[in-house]
Image 1 (cartoon, helix red, strand yellow):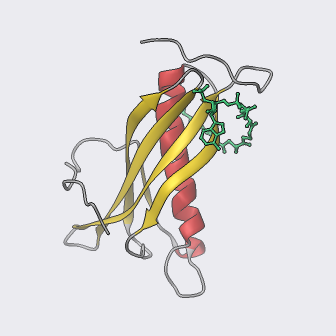
Image 2 (tube, rainbow, N blue to C red; image 1 turned 30 degrees about the horizontal axis):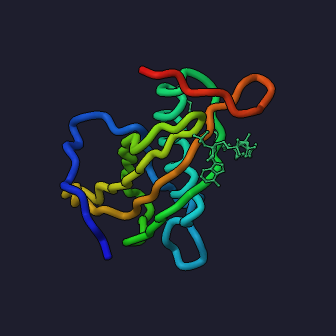
Image 3 (cartoon, protein in one colour; image 1 turned 135 degrees about the vertical axis):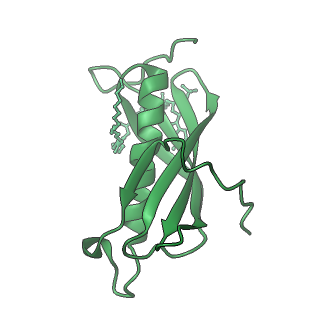
Length: 131
Ligand SMILES: CCCCCCCCCCCCCCCC(=O)SCCNC(=O)CCNC(=O)[C@H](O)C(C)(C)COP(=O)(O)OP(=O)(O)OC[C@H]1O[C@@H](n2cnc3c(N)ncnc32)[C@H](O)[C@@H]1OP(=O)(O)O
């Protein structure tokens, strides 16, 4: 079930905004779920990098839901929110909305919770500093 959040204010910048192009389609003619997932990962990583003040790696994806297909030409917007910060990990909720066509119809297409781990130069977990 789509526990749909309120429609975002598209005049405020999302964590990531891009356009779905023909090269990103699957055999059905819709946009590949993997492409959408990858945009979400980038958006969540950008949020986590800033909070962790350095490199992060994705370690888990939970509660991932694809509600509606994404179409060629859709404007994809990923909104992010940090749900929790652990010793070295951060859980980030990511909601994806598209704006479609000339009317700009807003559609909530995916949501998921991504876990990132702050890593040091050695690639091992490092503590996330308190804010
Ligand atoms: C400055 C501004 C610039 C902005 C600029 C923005 C740029 C924005 C673009 C960035 C773009 C890059 C984003 C790359 C995103 C990828 O694509 S990363 C590539 C895919 N991921 C990987 O290859 C990671 C592979 N895994 C690993 O290397 C190791 O698992 C890690 C990450 C080093 C962690 O090592 P580990 O031994 O598993 O760590 P461990 O101590 O057991 O656990 C560490 C923490 O993770 C948690 N954890 C571990 N596994 C899991 C799991 N499966 N689920 C949930 N939690 C878990 C643990 O509970 C623990 O949490 P804390 O209690 O410390 O908070």
